Image (cartoon, rainbow, N blue to C red; front, side):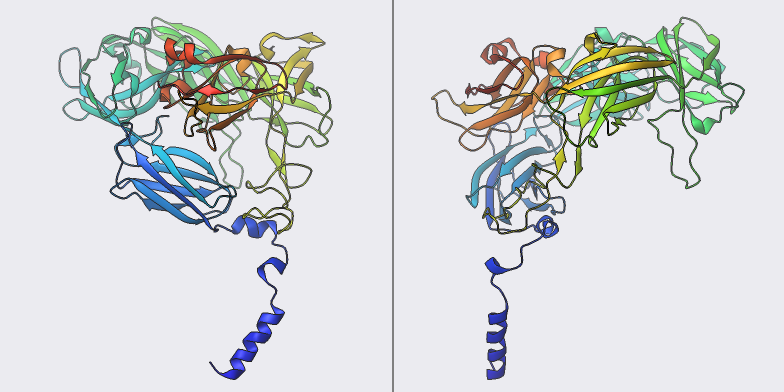
Length: 588
């Protein structure tokens, strides 16, 4: 190398600061960084412990701008990621013909990279997917072509237990269907008739009805099918015939003609075991008139919603914010004509949020979330709190629960983390090496303690608002008093073990809390078997550690066997309590 260049390099080295002496890295630089010295090694196996070759494994750091990395397992099922940042890393694995124990296509796990740069022995378990196949015929024994076949699981809904669809298949020209990639579990199968185009009044009369295995039109009489890991179950269904009817009427909005593009009309059963089901086709006449067909016998609620027309910008209207609505309960045993749905703006609810103990300085991240009691659909967006803690909700109707929810709302203020980085640390863990990242202020962690109207406590944290009018004087009391359960998971020999699935089941709906469901599932125990449930509402819980997680448990805790219920630790938690609870892992 020429002497002149050597001198230049020497001078450059003198004036260039070392890595430790550089200008502190800004938060934006940290978010963009996606490299480090950490290594993760692991294994992808099936539910028998057999390694899975050629499975895709994904890794992504807990950074908003982090890129996803992908590797493929070798013949021994092993994978390795190098040069990862010292942060929380999300791992995922997938392969055609397999599913996770939670029923998704992928299995996920979070790995915390601490001071140790090497994390190995990570095991990702995929279950061998099953198949439901069969043939659908009509009452005459002929194949039904184009029928919609739904496979469903039992779930808990706001209105009680019901069947929720996990996927669909369609029959071919032989009436044969095949539903694949199903995790093992119990499924219920229904068959709906093929779509027959635009409904007409001629749709009255005998027709094919939605039929449930083994051949009933009553969902309550449906029989479940057990699909084993990697198994194929054959189910033949004969569709039943039933009398079909039509419903016709008009949507009225004062003297104004209702445009079809602003209108949403649908029919929903008042008592149904189905969590979601497609309604019968509807046709409009362009002047507020409608016709629905074919409709089976039963009790229904007919709903109309009027939405704002698309603005001049061409953006679509907010589908979840109806301007006006109407509801009518009807019983169908014959054709129903001249139904009138009169649109109203709904009721207005005004009130204030009261914080138990001390209130936060900034309320901009808090919102009021109205939820129709007994309804699962989202029909009204959240309403932000005003700076003084008051709120006004419009367009609500019926019996409505009001709950306070929160979100990350700002990049300044005390406490919090950004992208998993603790302020004042760098990804490698050394303190004061980077400029303190501005933390996210979280308003989450508050729960509703009580709902009051004019000083009177309302049961179920809900208020009857009717179809219109105004309800004033609502008071929503919230507190940051969630309980926490933490401890160590051990095997039968008393040794701490990682990889166990942690489950907490609420004793009742009131304990579970709004929007959380009866079951909490935490990621696998990690780091000397330790686990934490950070946010459990005060009340009674059953806590247990499982070697594998039955995927239906998330939706329906009644699937938990008596043996596992007996193995669970039952605890009663007070407001803000911190409980240390060690668990012994059990096999489902």
